[in-house]
Image 1 (tube, helix red, strand yellow):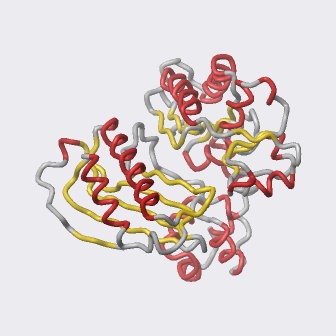
Image 2 (tube, helix red, strand yellow):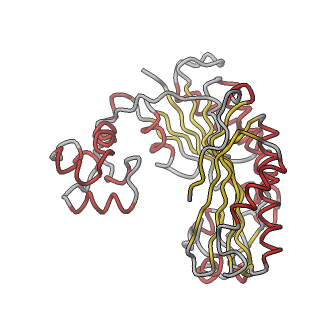
Image 3 (cartoon, helix red, strand yellow):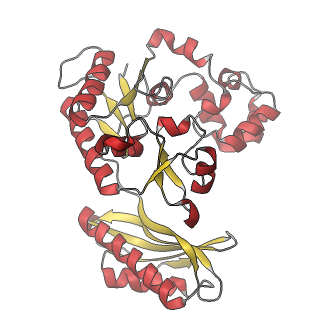
Length: 356
């Protein structure tokens, strides 16, 4: 029986800002762009959430909901620094740490450096060290598997600790709506409710053929999760699958020279990231969102590389296959996929394909 902890930092970006600026403490804070420039909320403090301000919301709407909202531009180097400090605390306990983002991670503490036999005690010590050393709060979920631990960490936020012992799994599952299942977003949840499945446990008794028609290949996985079963291990240092950079502009871009310069800048950033990670990439991609919100992506797959000039050249060639310079553009992005370590690149084929 595994002992899994999922730790989720509380309003991470906004909390770092409040920690570092006393004038922001206890105030409604949103991290993101300005309301007059298509800014969106990247994160909000709990004081702001009380007014309905949520991440991904247009900042203009956030200000309407909370006129006294304090807006702070993101400082990602500072957030990454705090995240690294938190990961060091995790790894002082166990090598089995699987980061999901800057502000959350899974830990397998079945056996741990601290010699704690109870995962609950480990979670308490983790939370205490984060509070004392980083001056931030975290919520944690303790359970026999990743699925349950993830749900548990969000059960009592902020600064919460929820423990689902093996003998409490069934009682916990009985409380959950169907959209608590992994892979069930608003659209899939709506489909399931149309066939009479409101609660997570009702997936178990659903007609197998009807469930298959409704959710396709998800059916078997949902049935296992509805039984509380999740055998996935905590995987430390997950391999990178892709990297990308994108930007939404305050004013639509129309001049082709400006658009090319932006794509080149992003492509070079991506190449620098590949160098830092000692990786090569087979596929270069770009993303273009026009002023009417229609979006296109273009990609090119070839011999693995991290050479900045080659990545830039491929990205700019892809730009020629869009309407850049002829239609206003609100968002641009560039990235890489098909990543491999240096020693895995030998013998790879040459140009394979172009694809939209």
